[in-house]
Length: 168
Image (cartoon, rainbow, N blue to C red; front, side, top):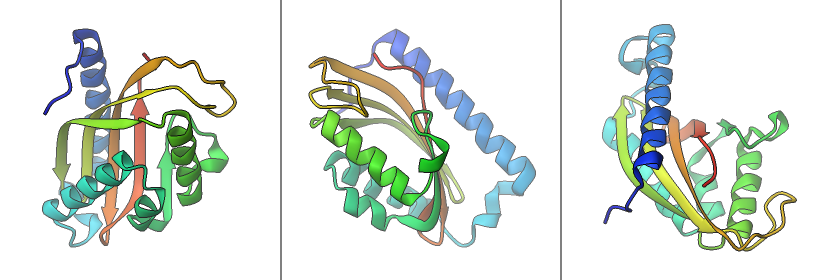
């Protein structure tokens, strides 16, 4: 079932997706045609990893998500500082989100993949009932359009780029 999206939110999601698609094209230009540098991972493998990732995220299973990440992975999010961009930083960030939004849910709108790269548009929703990195609970509903770009190497996420527009 698709989650209904307001036209203004959909426009933001589409703009974010265009930015992520540009990122993929730039990576292709500099790193090789059709992203073949990512080894023998197939589109099915990359999409399968993404499906596992989002299922675990919706169950708030931080340990399970860690199993999908390469040990030396890099995580990019506009909400994180530079010292938090590794596997444990991602775990800490996710744990903070789950605490602040106990009903946090990722609604997947579209998934695109090529070689070892997966891009997914999501609408992330939840109710802010707990502390969010020092921000007290507001008890308000929030929805955030998010685009994830994952680089998959040897069946694990080596890089995860999370691009968001703004909290609603």
